[in-house]
Length: 290
Ligand code: NAP
Image 1 (cartoon, protein in one colour):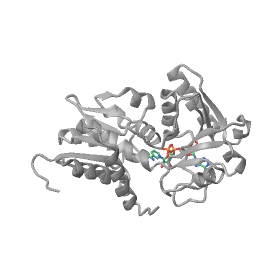
Image 2 (cartoon, rainbow, N blue to C red):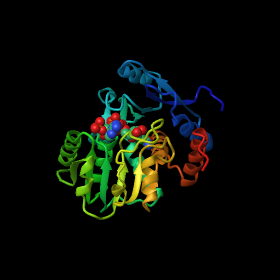
Image 3 (cartoon, rainbow, N blue to C red):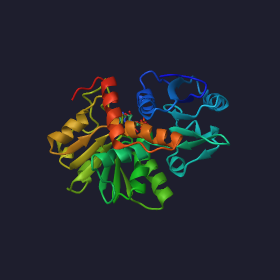
Image 4 (cartoon, rainbow, N blue to C red):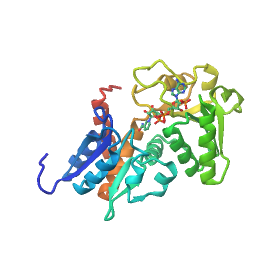
């Protein structure tokens, strides 16, 4: 790649950022598209997010991704917010405007696009959502936006599930989200559900862990998504498959959140063919051989 006076700079703000796959996504996209753009990770220490965003704007940084721990903390530093990001209360993409940066959330549209490529449907489905942290809250919002029939949100700390349900139901003025404790899965009607695993249980190196270990739970699941992609197949996914269900991991969600951010920064549409090529690069980077 050739860097010159016209090279656009994009990047990632977070802490830590050492293991991010985002440079693989964006630098490869720029290469394929023959675009004069470079993407670099920026580690921002000790809540210096305001200085970082102001500095980035002053330096003419074209676009930014925001990751842990700044997805909510960045909001007061923005000139404008997209409606979905505002509802979710978390921003992972900044787009440069005349007034400052505008905040978007491409994680949820990314998950939706990833699910579409695997022919998963949300509309009209009964969904079991495991977890009530930042990711689960956003998934609950996506399920409401995409008109799921009902969303059972099961969490270890039931009060957190209740808080998410109350807040998200409140935003949509409906009561399609039903909070429960993890063990309450037994109370769910005997039918097949789409399950979305949005806890951090099973994340490497704790690969033997699973949020619900009882076999009976997996008889209820027809299709499943685990937001985790490291390991490539979590124990949750293997249990779903062992009970005849279909399961995908969170790597494509990561891919599409990046693609959507790139599309916003550069006003382009990335083809599925290119998406597949980037996925191969991401797997190479993670040393995944299927
Ligand atoms: P978070 O806010 O820290 O929430 C963690 C969730 O996991 C909470 O619901 C927590 O339950 C639950 N949990 C943790 N340890 C548990 C245990 N031992 N038993 C039962 N439940 C447990 O994290 P987050 O930001 O929502 O992220 C959740 C996962 O999504 C992470 O693994 C992350 O890697 C993944 N993610 C993936 C992508 C992607 O692009 N693929 C994007 C975002 C996030 P309590 O409330 O009871 O503590």
